[in-house]
View 1 (cartoon, helix red, strand yellow):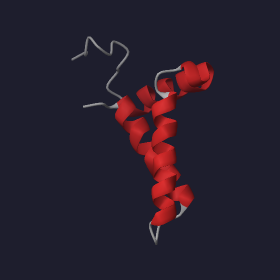
View 2 (cartoon, rainbow, N blue to C red):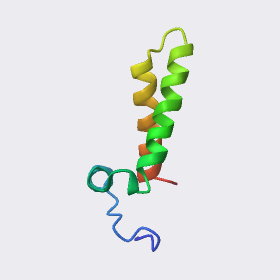
View 3 (tube, rainbow, N blue to C red):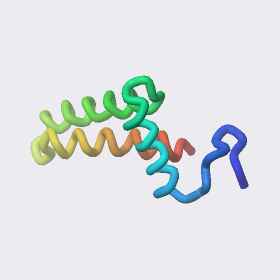
View 4 (cartoon, helix red, strand yellow):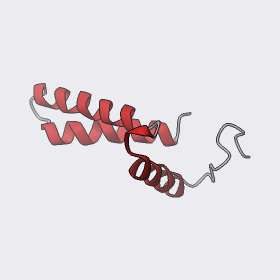
Length: 75
């Protein structure tokens, strides 16, 4: 079943993620997903700096990855 709010949603996560990432790379900061993903990446990096067993890089990847996933699959 196709969601009318997301007409290009094929149901395949890899295809949807590739389209979203391609849009983010081509549009830069004007794409609606870029800023939230960067903000969550920064939040993850700060959290990683304070947590004893998590590095800044892991926190950055976890924060950005979580928000990117929620942008592709909001439900």
